[in-house]
Image (cartoon, rainbow, N blue to C red):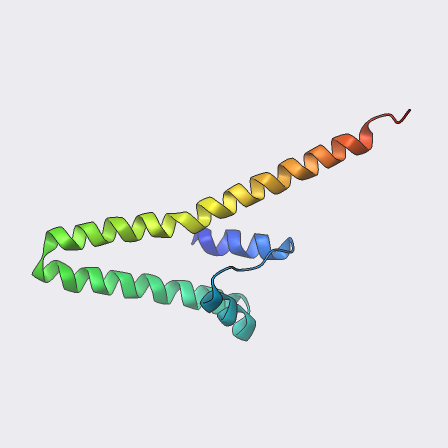
Length: 101
């Protein structure tokens, strides 16, 4: 759910959602669209892993690990974007406070 919060912060600051499916859901239903699309993706992955676990637990664990790694990418990228924005704003503020000759 960190992904949802960070996406909303970035959008509030003027950014946009890069996932076209999520972008369409947001355009159609606002933040509820974002929540629903993220929840649907989580439910889908959990269901697939659960079904696979009944046949091949080792493959299910591998798929779950890959899904977690993939799911970690968007919030990590969002945090990097927000850190870069904060740094840029700090540098801009510092430039504005510098005495001018």
